[in-house]
Structures are given as C-alpha cells and as structure tokens.
Amino acid sequence: MSQIALIIKALLQTEKSSSYLAEGKYLFLVNNAANKIQIKRAVQQAYKVKVKNVNTFISRGKLKRVRHQLGRTVDTKKAVVTLAAGQKISEATT
Image (cartoon, rainbow, N blue to C red; front, side, top):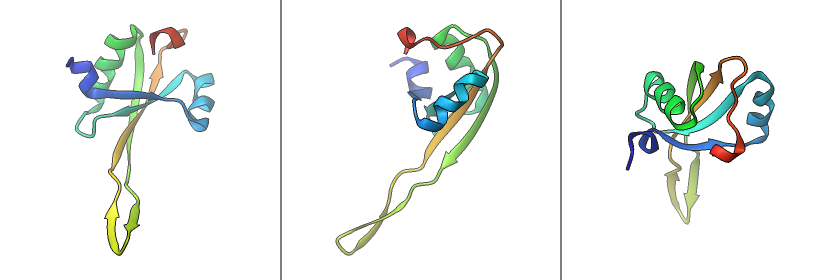
C-alpha cells in the first residue's frame, strides 16, 4: 500500500464541503496520526495540484448504546485543504 493511501482515506463530498469549492477548498478524511505537512505532500502527489494551506480538526466519536452497554464510535480526523489560485481537483482524478 502506498504512503499516500495511508494518509488520505477519502475526499469527502458533503453539503458543507460543496460550499467550500467556491473558495478552492476541499475536505479530506485523513489518518488520525497524519500531520499537516504529510497531508499537504500526499494531496500534492495524489492530485498533482499546489496546496496553499491545510487546516485539520478531529471529530470526536459519539456515544452509542447497544442493548445495555455503552460504546463509542471512532474519532475521525478531517483536513480542509486550500489550493493555490487557479488549481482544482477534477472529478476524473478522484
């Protein structure tokens, strides 16, 4: 498995992420251990674009109850990647 596939899990296409497209921003689901520098390099290599900025955040897992036991869904890390002016990720490369 390549290094890029270990860092970038998916390009997320949600209602909120589609509002980011006008600003040249894309939302990615990434590995929880990945840092901003690794994410930037992986996006540049995978999609052949110039990355201007990377912002990350962790979505905490929700509490769930199954029968009479409490559990928790997994925490996920997401990255909002801003591309340089004139750059975009086409649907053909996803």
